[in-house]
Length: 111
Image (cartoon, rainbow, N blue to C red; front, side, top):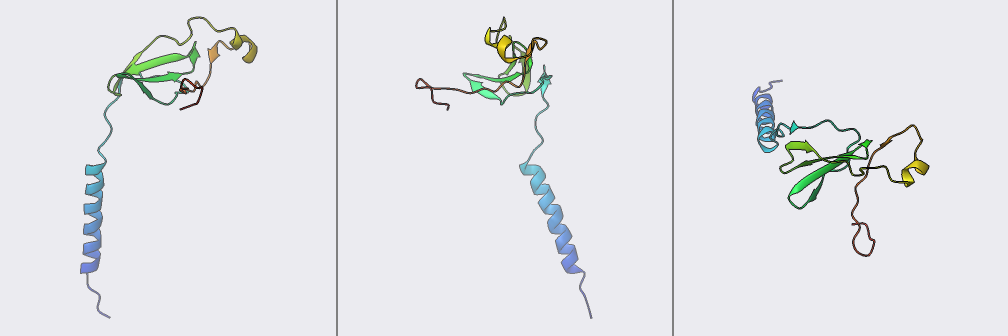
């Protein structure tokens, strides 16, 4: 039985075109710069003109960025550990782990 080589050629050509289209549509992400080390990061949130991320550390560490590319270290959320942390964490632990960021409106609803 005679088989044509053209179907395989067209299939491989379509595959190459598909791969090129994917590369064009999904460009590589920008190279992140600045202070990038963070343990157990929260979700990135926007407040005003800055983006923020929070993580495990002394007093909950913070980092901010204007463009989500260049990140700078910010102040700790708590300058001194709140009283409730001594009853909810082990005394040897000085860091608050895995911070989660939520927003509650005036009525206490999580948004």
